[in-house]
Length: 240
Image 1 (cartoon, rainbow, N blue to C red):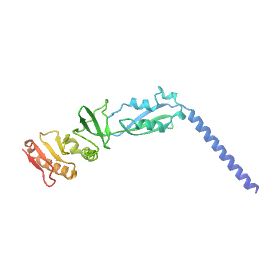
Image 2 (cartoon, rainbow, N blue to C red):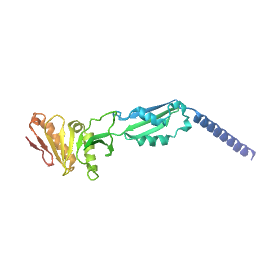
Image 3 (cartoon, one colour):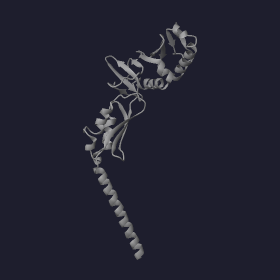
Image 4 (tube, rainbow, N blue to C red):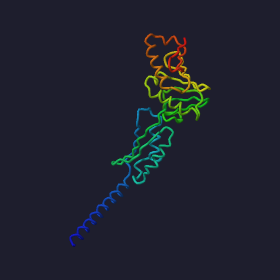
């Protein structure tokens, strides 16, 4: 009976000692100051937002990270603040073991630039509006015409297909949305325009166009055409 009690007492003492040491270490660690802040941009996009801007938000407008105690840093609050920025899609903020406040930042990805009267903006990969950046201009197709709630989803899907396809991304430089919903596309190196029709059978139309282009480019006949009609999914109709 005595052995059992002594064993339990020892366990309680050891547990209490471990808890005390852990709490003491946590307290000492929390009182330590940050060494510096560091911003890492994830992905291949050029920087639409300056690292200095992100860093300012990261240290909550304080001049020097070394003046900030670790336990004063609200990581969740900083992440939310970064994620509300127009150019940022997602951020991950944490403090490393060596006392560095780090932010891994993924920028939004513009896939087209829309010119709407006097204003201009990007459409990002998610199909949302994205403002232009003073820091960098993305080389994406220029879109003119009306984008609204009715056609936004279909157009965003079409824009993504162009962005994700190496050939189309290089070839298509502009898209005009006609009042009836039909699309006219313009290519980089030739004088013809593409009558794409409405946003129906998109995959088949693009397959037809790529097959036609690969064949026509061999005999240089692309220079002879004024219009490439893709409205009919069974064939490509060319006008000289």
